[in-house]
Length: 310
Ligand SMILES: NC(=O)c1ccc[n+]([C@@H]2O[C@H](COP(=O)([O-])OP(=O)(O)OC[C@H]3O[C@@H](n4cnc5c(N)ncnc54)[C@H](OP(=O)(O)O)[C@@H]3O)[C@@H](O)[C@H]2O)c1
Image (tube, rainbow, N blue to C red):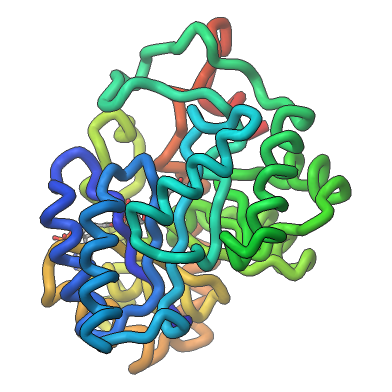
């Protein structure tokens, strides 16, 4: 597995074809880990790229590490298997390297829903419901359809409730991680449990959907500490975020449509590391600024997006 992966969420402004082209370019320049999800709406296009690369011998299946995620509207009984089967069909793979529960709620929203919209069927977190989903996930691993299984968008409180009930523990936890949002308690908890951490929005997701932007959000690449370190290394502030991620001990999954950017992103984590003093400066720079707040998953009557995060 590479030290970094390749994100495939095109926000609201990139087409599936553009993303598949970026995946193809990234494969050719050496990326082997691709973070997919059914809700990104581009697995069929990405699958065509994988199939071509495998057929042409550009990469062997065992060299690839492909993840996907079940979307919230497919958490019912029997639906996890259906979701995984559809993903495997679209990605044109026989197995997935890690299959995630994308969000720990069945709550979902229509595509491009406004941030303040509420689905009347949405419900607060339920460990009972989550474990019913997780039992189906465990079956996918037992059946060999998923090599490993993982959870995403969890909290320490939720993990403490469900981990003791798991027959198969998650091999990976995917969470939002960037210099302005370091989630130290959750990160340390995962490491102590022997769970590997994958960090999303590693550069602060500058092109995330408008519904995920709020006044007061910190822009990582404009943080004075990040800018000062970028200047000292003569690199773009985005690279500081990626170097920080890898040296911090997790796997970032940056997205880019630009060949120059994704090539530089892959290369930068192998050269010119940040110093201990720079890492210490960034540790202190944490702003506890969550960007993907998940407000569209709130249930009627919930007051604030923070209720999703305990
Ligand atoms: N599990 C979850 O719930 C969840 C939630 C959100 C995201 N994710 C995953 O995490 C991945 C990454 O998150 P993200 O895409 O939101 O945010 P991100 O990777 O932090 O930011 C991506 C943006 O940064 C720009 N960029 C990339 N490299 C750059 C460089 N070297 N210099 C300047 N700009 C650069 C890209 O623009 P250009 O195209 O111009 O390079 C792109 O728009 C997603 O694609 C998805 O796979 C998972």
